[in-house]
Figure 1 (cartoon, one colour):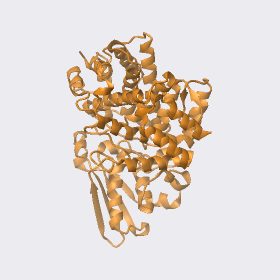
Figure 2 (tube, rainbow, N blue to C red; figure 1 turned 135 degrees about the vertical axis):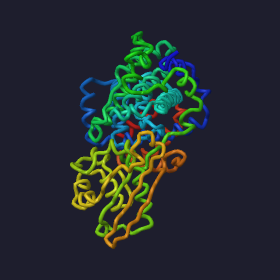
Figure 3 (spheres, one colour; figure 1 turned 90 degrees about the vertical axis):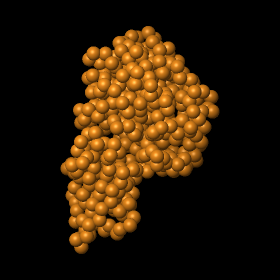
Figure 4 (cartoon, rainbow, N blue to C red; figure 1 turned 90 degrees about the horizontal axis):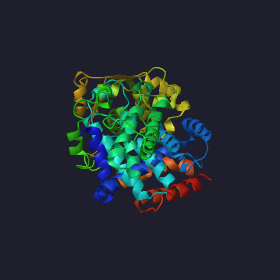
Length: 458
């Protein structure tokens, strides 16, 4: 049995009662987080464009998280998955191959569960199974995949969305194999689109295609049931490497669940994860030193080659999408305000003379010890500040808050949710929505969640 069959067998076999309670608890943290960052992005231009496009295809049974509209399950997954990733504030895996696991899966299973009037527990289990497949594949995939310029969230996320949707539909192994084969041919996403609206679209496409793959397989649509491992298949063409084998995949799925060990990370900052270690280092420096912009001559930021390759650099940073991928911008904001938050990603802030001037003092580079791809497990972010009195201060960070084992607490996740959602829905409705999401496993129909959302949007 190859990797495709091993995944299909796992997804068809796993039962809700076999998932440990701690996995459910951690998964709910990510449900709250993902929903919050998606709602926060609903006022942006990306949301408006997507809603206009799906409006032309007519109404459906699945809610758009950006307001009171509905669409088909596939189109709702497309919109909501894109919104979940639009601010680059959504969660991330901790495997050597970086990816965002929730944005391609949670919108897919919630859209499908709403259309089929399924329970919150059904949706939560499907989400856990989809994320498990994504993250375990990411733990096996060669770094060559990412080095080639593929966006792992788009590629692996399509498989996760398909598996989660297939579990929700209770498909047998044979049909899950077909769903994976269909999804494999629909997967795609380029790092060259980082810093544009199309980068978050990758997550939406993965969610949409996952739903479509499962629905097609349910109705008898066929594909190569060895599409991952076959000659000229996904593993070969996308540079996954030799470790993605049937025996290895079967060995690690659910043993233990990835939510349990090593865990999935949550973000403190609404920027590309590749900026976060340097931000942690800088904020630590700022807390113990008076960093006045006029006294700063130069700021050096050292980081890993894989982080460096996805950042945009200094030139031409004018939009919020670009700023999320600029370490120069993030560092400049952190120096001035002591934090990096959603309010900073405004074009007036980005293009201000103060920010633009400070950005020119930031130099980002890859030190020799971090140029080897295989050194990612030893990555760090280091910030060195040169001051006008000729003094030099340095700080290095090897871990960031929110990354296992430094998990965010439930209180911290709830605060982030409030920060994201209150400006859109108001405090009372935000509290009601949070309360419903926190008990998602007890909700008899996921439509209850969206009744709160639609009431909030009314």
